[in-house]
Every structure is written in structure tokens, then in C-alpha cells.
Length: 316
Image (cartoon, rainbow, N blue to C red; front, side, top):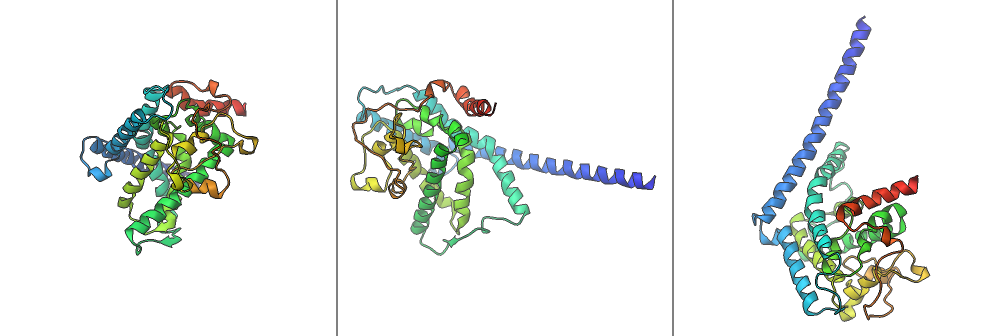
């Protein structure tokens, strides 16, 4: 009888512990999501410094690049409100703000798990930046993260499971600045770990400086997708540009580039170094998309479900 009672007590204690941990995890997720939502609201209501206001920074950059599209259009027959314009505008704010609120708690939960094993942002440090000049810190941080994103982008094209989600971005039929942020939120799940790894490898980097890199990459990304003929001259071998990125979205590519070309995010140099650069001409009049893009739904909800349904069909 005593043994059964003791066993029951152990089971009860175990269940109580598991319930306590579950509540702790729920609290971490809910508190982080609430904190992120409050941060977004402070951005919207101008309750943060302009230099760190991601909401209005995105909006202002978008308006400036859209204006440049209208004043200096590359494909002059393309409508100012091109096909998919409003869909892409919706993706901009959903991916940057709504999804960040929804997923932030889970990222914090992962960080919590790492801390339980004694892993923190200093554990994987390979390069200590704290004693370097802030400008050098920013450059190293930017170049490192850009390479990791270039590598992730290439994997989005080569790995079938990842490609099913990346197809949302490649369903664009007319290039325009807002197409930059038409992507499936699952891509954040793939990009975030490597970006976090990059931050962990670079010890001593001050996060408050990162907003400068953030706004620069948004501007470059918007320009890359804009209806503007721009290649930066000699700097095209360093900086990604609209002419180069147009061919990343090309419907037809040579057989040797069947997985895609021009994977650069902000920098083009990785494509030149690793032989994935491809710019056959610069007239800008090419078909965009991918084989089978007619099966991609037109609305955001259908597109968000597309990757999951495609994976299910593949597995059935």
C-alpha cells in the first residue's frame, strides 16, 4: 500500500511539474508576443526615435522607391498599380509586423531552451567586435549576415520542401518594389536561425546599431524589385541591382542554371564569386515566374496555404 501511495505521489509531482513548465512556456510566449505588439504600436504612434521606427521607415522607403518607379519606369507599359500591387503591399505589413508578433514568442522560447543548456549569445563567438570601430562593426555584421542570407536563399531554390514556400515570392508576374516582401512567412523560419547564428558568431556587436543595416537592406531590396533600370555601373559586381535581380525571377533559364541565378540579397559579389551570376542582356522584357505557377492561388490566404498543401500532395 505504501509503495502504491509513494508511486502515486511521484506521478502527481511529475504531472504538477509538467503543468508548471507548460504554464511557464505559455507565459514566455504570451508576454513576448504582447511586448512585440506593443513595440509595433509604439512605432505606428511615433513613440520611438525616428532612427529606429521600422514601421514608418518601411513606409517612407516604399513611397520613395514607388515614386522613382513612376518617374523613371524601365518597362513603360507596366501599370503603376501593376498586377499584384495591393497583394504585395499587404504582404509587406503582414510579414514585417503581424507575423513578427505571432512568432516572436516561439523564438523567445527557443532562446529560453538554449539558456537552460548554458548556451547564450557569447557561446559561439568567433570574432569579438566590441573593441572595433563602430563603422567596421557594422560592415562586418552586414557582410556576414548577407552571406548567410545568400546561402539560405540558394537552399530555398535547391531543397524541394523549401522551394514550395519560396514559390510564393516567384509567383510575381510584374516586378515592382512591393514584390520585395511578397514571401511566405515560413521563409522567416528558415532565415532566422542563420541570422541569429551570425549575430552569435560576432560577439560584442551592439544591437542598437542594427537599424542602419535594416533600413539599408530594405532600400536595396525594394530597388532590386522595382521597375527601374539601374545597375550601379562598376559597383554592380558588389551591390545587387534591379537589372541583375530581374533575371532571378526569369521564367526561362539555361539548363546549367536550373536551380536559379542571382541569389544575392543586398550584395551581388557572392553570385560572381560562386558562379551563379547571370545577366544575358538588359532590355527588361522577359517573362517572370516558374513552371507550374498557374497553380498558385491569387489571394494571400490561398498562397499561405499553398506550401503546406503542396507538401501534402507530394507526400501522399
